[in-house]
Image 1 (spheres, rainbow, N blue to C red):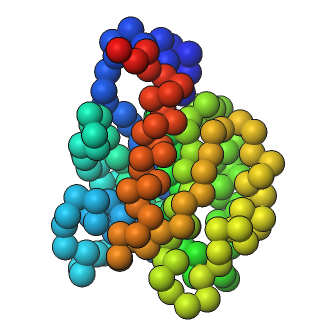
Image 2 (cartoon, helix red, strand yellow):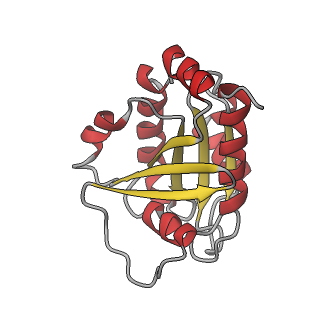
Length: 184
């Protein structure tokens, strides 16, 4: 998020945030959104393109852009990088065979200049499944501790049970607000 965006938020005290949700296909991005919105999660199909959900959290309107994660769609992610307050990276903690692919895509994402300064949350999804990597294992594997370009947090969660989702969103909102708003 550029300096002009920060100044704009300070000036207008706007209570609308734009969050970009990315990750490999089948990580659980759409399920997370539907769970937050109280929608049925029993029938979810792969996202071809994007979904936009507007959720109200506390006093803030969250416009969440859920972008499809299939390999053929990833080159289009850059079309959505402008003016985001936060990036939520969703990882399937149980999909060990695709961790290398996840690491490669995440590295490319974090190198994007248009996302510099954005709050960064990793949802370590599917923690309810046997064999899921712990958040500590994911931090180490993705080398998140060396990340200095973004305020970041990893949050274990389950899109199916809802566990950890609100804690992650609360951290994102609080981080953005503490850095970008003049509080009354």
